[in-house]
Image 1 (cartoon, helix red, strand yellow):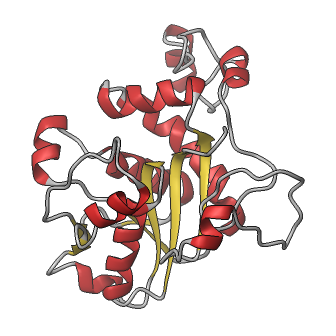
Image 2 (cartoon, helix red, strand yellow):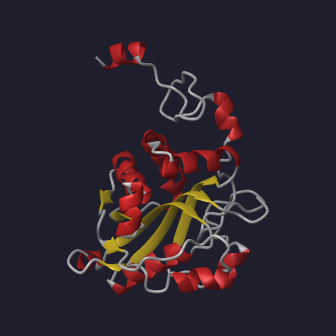
Length: 239
């Protein structure tokens, strides 16, 4: 049945619509135009670094050497530019939910070097007013698809966002962190289930890390034993 369906409805590139083979979602041309992160990366936020990837070496970018991140390790699948930026914006604002499965595959590959048994997948929550406008939380869609790709446990509502925050566009680094102060908290009933767990926070984009920091602090407050960060795309300086 699956073979017959593929003959009638062949898989197509999620970027240009050309027929593709395999589960990666992109044709060869679009794959080449999409800036996947590879090689040496910051072990904390996943931003690419110069040099080669050396097994067992823990590298940090300039930002992560200066900012005390409340999570231990992190990764990202794409650089937020060019075709990757277009895909992320289409997924986030253009109702392109068909991008979730290939994106989860890219994210699974990115997190594989630091994935640990028993990780709990927790999406970055959004405020209910934003959920009402957008109709879905893109982080939750990604985390759910990632759970299918990795077999990790998915916990969609262990964190909540009770306070509406201003968009970060145009804000300084300090303003972004101040804007997110206390904006994410454990769910009053389900949040206690974070105690003693290894948590993998999931979102579509990491820029300054302020949103991830607020979520990680909420997990730590609930008693999580370790927190990791994973974004589909990473905004990087001079990228």
